[in-house]
Structure formats: structure tokens, C-alpha cells
Length: 415
Image (spheres, rainbow, N blue to C red):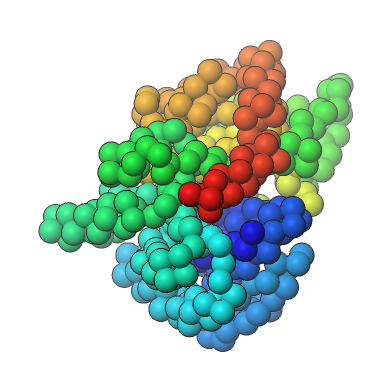
């Protein structure tokens, strides 16, 4: 099977969409399929092109047997609304020559990842031209999120954008997304049930596993990340590890840390980069219970997640049903308690319900109270962590999910 993956974000060594695109391509290549990728230079989550890459030149790489073509992409220093649109369109236009270059290769499947949805028309045209199977995979409902978060405004523009998106989605042979709630939204947009595929984000449950805590004795010294950050061994660590962007509602965590600043046994650790990092650091500048880490190397990810006693995952109310944070799988697999902010019935709340704590978004007092209650109950934290770990092993294992994808890819070609 020849598979062309058209994914702007392709950075297997990083986190988020780029990591999943990379692991999927590598797994399919290892199974004997021929995989090619068209992508931008790595830029996420720091919104700066990674060292060794250029924003202005085409480049061809070989990554673990997968051929990767990088298209020039403008990356704004501050990703505001117009900057984001220009950023996405720059990749869409510059990648078209690379897409046309695949005509001689004749892929069996053209697999395009949204965002950006602006790549979907060209991918669909290539698939139709070659009579290949066309597949749209939705990580974020980008159009809904852009209007919901206020990045783009105007009712007429909104109606046109949503109508164009619906028309495009109905033209693809397969449309997949990462949660049952997001799949239901695809049905609302008119995609036929026979074309829908649930393709959730996965986690490597062998690489991410519960880290044994050392027995606490009086005067015990902190180890690992706790020692590096000066956090006492007996403290309860509340960890947020991921992109620091506008969709996360990350400012809520600073408010919660402020409310709990007098609880000397509760420490907050923020690990990651992104456009909201500077404002978050400013909000925490006088808080002795707040600590910051840059994006950590992949080989220390399990140690990082295992440092936490409680994982927190804030999400803005107007984005919680349009995106499913990829970091959730690692949190659950780490065997630690999880708190998320989401309204009942959203994709995020359903994923955590019965496995963690769900609080209303935008309410720092409720979040602080949930953190304080869990900090005082090690038994509850341990129970929640065990339930989350079992769920990750049963439902989020990478090999199980990618084997299902392989079967669906073969069925789409046969159809």
C-alpha cells in the first residue's frame, strides 16, 4: 500500500499532532507499506523553526525509512489571528508543488491531517485525479475553534467557512477524528455514517508507565525533577505539561496557584513552550509555589509525568468540544490522578469521567478546591491513577489503534 501523508505538523521528536503523524508514518512503514510525507519545517510549540531547518527552503529528509518533503512556511513570531491565517496559507500554497510531484508515484491513499483545513482541497483533487482513496483526519475542528475563540469574526464569513467545510468533508472517502463527540460533530456536518472512522490519539503504554514513588521518611531528600526545581520530596506536585497556547485557558492555573499559595505542601509545575508562556510567568512571578520548565527531551517524558501527584488539563469552554488534547493519553498512562476543566457532555469530560475529576471551565476557585481535596487524599489519587492506567492499556494502546487504522486503510482502497 502506498500512503501519502499530508500533514503540516510532522515532528516525531516533539509533542502534539506532529508526534502522532510521525509515529503513524513510522509504524505503517515498518509494516511494509510505502509512506511519504509532505510537511512544514518543525515549529511547534515554540512558534519558531527548529534548529537545522529553514522556513524559506524546500528540503527532503529520510526519517526511519519514511521520505519527508518539507515545504517553506512562514512562522509568525506572535501567532495572532491574521498571523495564523497567513501561516497556514503559506504552507498550503508552498506545498502544492510537492503534492503535484507525487503524480508519478501514484499513492493508493491520500491522507490529509486537519489542521489546516486549507490543505484539504488540493489533497482531494490529487486523490480524485489518481483515483486514490481520499482520507481526512480531523485533530481539531479548526473552523469552529477559530470563530469560537474569537480569532476570526463576522457572521457572513462564518456561514461561508462552515458551508465550505461541510462540502469538503462530504467529498472525502473517509473522515476520521479522535473522539466519539467529535465524530458526532462530523455527522452533524453531513458526513455519511459509512465514511466515518474513530481514530483516537494513542499512547505508548510501554514507554509511559507508572513511576514508583520512593518511600517517604522524615528528612528524605527530593530526587530527579523535584530536586532540580527545589521541591520537597513530601510535597504534592500539580503538573501541567504541554503547549502553552490560547486554546488551553492556561491562565486559570495561575489563578489556582495564587489561591493555594499558602498551602505550602502544594507546588505547581508548568512544563512547555508557547505564546502564553510569558504572560503565565508574569502572573506567577511572586508565587513561591510555581515552577517552570522548558519542553523536555522525549527520553525524560516518563520521568516528567511520573513526578506529578496530580495532572491538570485546563481547556477553554469554547474549545472543549472542538479539540481533544493529545497530552491526555500520557497523563492517564502515567497512573496519576487527573483534573480537567470542561462542561459535562463535551469530548474532554467524557474521556475523563469516572477516571478523574471534571470541574467547570473558567472557575479558578473550583479548580483550586479540587486540587486541595485531592492533595489531602493519597488513597483517592492512587485509585484514580490505577483506573486511568487500566483505561490507557485497554483503549489507547498504540499498536491496537494503528492496527485498526491499517485495516480501515485497506478497506477504503478496496471500496
